[in-house]
Image (cartoon, rainbow, N blue to C red; front, side):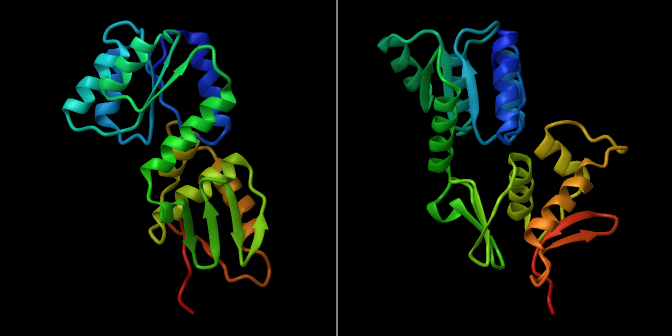
Length: 221
C-alpha cells in the first residue's frame, strides 16, 4: 500500500492486518514502484497524489514492465476525468476518499476473486475445505470457527500443501514482520489450529516437520 499521509496509512494498515492481510507500506511513489517491482503482491492500493512519482505514473511503469498486479487507486480526486485517467493508466478500480473501510474490503475481495479461477476460491486438503471468498472453513461437512489470524495461517499452509513451510515464512507472510527466533507465536497458533481441525477421531492433517517447519497434508497410512 502506498499512502503518504502517515495517519491514514497507519489506520488502513492496522485494519487490513486485523482482517488477516499482510501489508507493506510505501511513503512515496518511488518506494511503491520499487516494492511492486520486486515483490509478488496479490493487490496494490495506491494513493494518486504522492511525493516523487504519482500513482498514475507508478502504474504506467509497472504495466510497461508487464506487471499485471491488480491496482486499486485511493484518492481525494473524484472527478470523472481523474477516474478515467486512472483506469487508462492501467488501474483496475478507483475509490474516492473519504470511504468506508467496509467498502474498501468489499472492493478488495472482488478484485482478488477476479484474479483467481472460480475453482481456486475453495482450497481443499483431504476433507478440509477453506472458502477464501466467504472466509469459512469446514472439515467433513462440519463448520470450523477461525479467527482472522488462524484463517490466514491455515490458508498459507493449504496453498503450500503438501510442501512444508518454515516458521520464518509463516511469520513473514501471516504476521507481516521479520522473524524473531525467540518468538513462539507460530507454535501457539499451530496448537490453536490443531485443536480445531485435528479433533479426536479425525485423521491428523497438521504435521510438525522436525528441523523444517509445518505441513498440512494427509499422511499415507
